Each structure stands twice: as structure tokens, then as C-alpha cells.
Length: 488
Ligand code: NDP
Ligand code: HEM
Image (cartoon, rainbow, N blue to C red; front, side, top):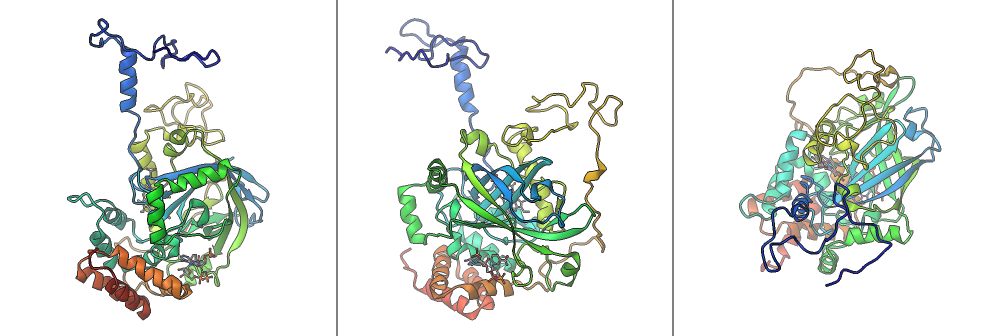
């Protein structure tokens, strides 16, 4: 068959740049004979295909991303010297939304927590806020994160998701009640990434030129409104498309309907933190709005689709360790676990110099002394002789103007029992009391649905926890379980 000739198309080349004469027919010994091993173009093509996949993210494997910008409309310059948070500043960014448990091919409309990860390319380095669509999390100690994730992934023998494992773990971990209640409430199944809030979730810090620090929580409020599916609606949608979020986000941006989120913060002084009846660094708790009101500081908009999903979304690497001058971490121990885990995951998933990939590369000068390894394709820092530090050849130097104010830490090093005396019930109760009858009934039904096949002892232990939150909660789940069709 003749190959269509288009004279305006660029000439096909090998990866080494040599023009390709024939991209249709392998080199063979005779018209009917086998291909020859010297057909290196065939071999290169097959070999490249074998390497088209990289390991998927160990969690949050299925995701949807878009570019945009953050505009600061409020003035919190008294709280932070971060250039990105100064009034009127506009900063390019990229967002990636995700589900947690499903693999890369999972259906988008599954009930799950949604990842809400933002990378801001500030003039003083990348700031990553790697949050979720919920303000709290299932566990409060990073030692429990791998156990928790194992319960969400596949069972080692059946290779199926295991409701028994999920409810066994949750019923033995009362700190999960708050997040479990959110997950099975209406907000556990948003119709698209545009119709949900985002939360930095952890307590972070802001610090100013005077070296004064406050604790802070970040909130991103959807301007599209909250919209959710019921389980039944989602089942129908998944029957029609497994890619509903990609279609919705990509489609909206292609159509010029750019989604926006209002950026707000809550602020707590160090003195207020010391006087608080609960640990302000506990990721299973929110800061009540009445005590710590939301302060509007800006808006972000997503307005450009990636041209190459793999290069711009699959190779995207976020890390809570990426903070910039004026923004810091906190004593939240989950956050400390994450400060380690992400860059470690990227070195495994993407390679040593993953931060040099275009989508991860800061949009400001970068000078460091990390040397060789995979993807070492960038220039020598400033002089080829300055490849160690200190040096006499004009190599990059530290700048103490960027020092974070010191933080007082005290007390014995020990493994403190994080469950000891911790109130795991009041805040889930406050959430439960926000729900009207319809929301409560859907909560009970969603939980019962997810408990199908779970041994009675585990279900009963979980119901005792729900009853402790509120007697109606436990009773409601019991009734919903009784109402389940025994055939399923
Ligand atoms: P408020 O009445 O001031 O705030 C209630 C919050 O609940 C709002 O932020 C609202 O979000 C959010 N909300 C409503 N429905 C749901 C749902 N189904 N799942 C998750 N969040 C929902 O009360 P408080 O600040 O005193 O908090 C009461 C409870 O509200 C908390 O225990 C917590 O469970 C929940 N909550 C609190 C947040 C906080 O930072 N204080 C943040 C999110 C939830 P929106 O404004 O977008 O409608
Ligand atoms: C992804 C670890 C808790 C939000 C990941 C990844 C790892 C990880 C290893 C995959 C990274 C990659 O390969 O790119 C952990 C650990 C945690 C923790 C060890 C606790 C100790 C949390 C919490 C949140 C969160 C509390 C939200 C508040 C996310 C998001 C992603 C992610 C949004 C996907 C980022 C993206 O879009 O690329 N996590 N995580 N994680 N995690 Fe966590």
C-alpha cells in the first residue's frame, strides 16, 4: 500500500536525527522471509514501546491535571514574607486531582477521598501544597499510613479490594471516624474535580521578616458549587464512562469555562495553640471556624490543558517538603512523615533528577551541587570547577536571609500513645449534626453498602464507635444494614 504523501509534514527521523526512509516495512531476507536483526529501527521501536510505562504512584495513581494561576487579593504581608503571598502577586501553577486507592485505570467516579495537589512556580522556588478534598485524615501517626493504605489496596490472596480489611482497621482506629464520616457523606463522591473544595489539611506555618511565626491552615473553596453523585447515580455514570473526571475537567477548560477556587486561611498564634484543649497539629481534627475564622487571601483558576498528559501530569512530582521562604511546616507528625516520603517516591518512580523535568522545574534560577545520575542533562552550576562547596571558583553560596525562625521543642523522646485521652468523637459529632435527615440517611446507606460481607464482630465494633459519635448514627447504620438485600 502506498503511504499518503503530505509534503508539509516534518520529515520522520530516528531518535538520533537521521531521516527514516521506510516506517512501514521491516527489513526481511527476501519477500517472504524473516526479519533481520540488523533492522535496528524495528528493534528501537519495539524496545521503546517496552519502556513506555513507569511505575504508577503507589497511592493516588489515577489523576487529572491542568495549568493555571494563583492571584493574591488579600493582604497578609504582616504574617508572611513569602513572595507568592504578597498582595497582587500572580503565580503560575499546576494542579493534579486524584483518587487515592484505585490504580491508573480505575473508574473516576468511585467513592474515595480526592487528592488536591497544587504546585506554585514562585520566584523563590516551587511551593507544593499536596492536600485532599477533606480537611482531616484517617490516621494521625505516619507509622500507621502503610497499614491503612494496605487495607485500601488489594488483598494479597484474592487480589480483590477487601471491605473486611477496611472496616477491621477503621473499627480498631477510632481516630479515623471523622474522615470515615466525610468519606461516606455526600461529599465523598463529587461529580467532578471542579465541584469540590481542597484543603491543605495539615497545620503549616507562616513567618514574616521579623521572624514571627503563626500556625496556618489552607482552604480552597470551589466557586462552581458542591455537587455530588449518590452511589446509584455514580454506578450509572461508570457504566457509561470510566473517565468522567478527565472528560469534565479537560472539556470545561477546552470550552473556556475555567474553574476557580477561593483561597482562604485560618490563623492561630503560638499562644493560642498552647492554650487549645486539643492538639492543633493533629491531622484528624479541624480548627472550628467560630474560633479561627476563615480569611480570604486570593483565588486560583485553571485555564490551560496539558498538551501531553504523560509529560505534564504523569511526570508531575509534588512534595510537602517543597516550601518557600515565609511558609513553613509544623510539628504535625504526619507532615514530617510526608516530608520524607514524597521525594523518596519520586526518586524511585521518576529518577534521580526528577526535579529537572520540565513540569517540575522551578521557574527561577536553580543552583545546587547534586552531581550525576539519571537525567543529569542540565548545565554545570556556574563554573565547571565549582562542583563541591565551599570552593574558590564562584560556586553558589547559601543565603542566611532565607533562614526560618527557630522553633522551641522540648520533652523526652518517647513513643507517646496518640490514642491516650484523645477525643475522637466530638468533631465527627459536629459534622454529623450538620447533616439534615436526607444526608444522614444517605450516610447510613453508603456505609451499609460498603460493609457488605464484613464479619459481624467487625461491623458491631464499628457500629459501637458510630453510636459513641451519636446514638442516631449507630442506629441508622444498623437499620441500613438490616435493609440490605441479603442476596448481595
Ligand atoms: P462550621 O459550621 O463553621 O463549618 C462547617 C463546615 O463543614 C464548612 O466548612 C462546610 O464546608 C463543611 N461541610 C458541610 N458539609 C460537609 C460534608 N458533608 N463533609 C465535609 N464538610 C462538610 O463548623 P465548624 O468549623 O465548627 O466545624 C464543624 C464540623 O464541620 C467539623 O467538625 C468538621 O467535621 C466540618 N468541617 C469543618 C471545617 C473547618 O475547617 N472548621 C472544614 C470542613 C468541614 P463549605 O463551607 O464548603 O460548605
Ligand atoms: C501521593 C505518601 C498522607 C495527599 C502520595 C505518594 C506517596 C504518599 C508515596 C505517591 C507520590 C508519587 O509517587 O508521586 C504519603 C504518606 C502519608 C501521606 C507517607 C502519611 C504519612 C497524605 C495526606 C494527604 C496526602 C494526609 C492529604 C492531606 C496526597 C496526594 C497525592 C499523594 C494529593 C497525589 C499527588 C499527585 O497528584 O501526584 N502520598 N501520603 N497524602 N498523597 Fe500522600
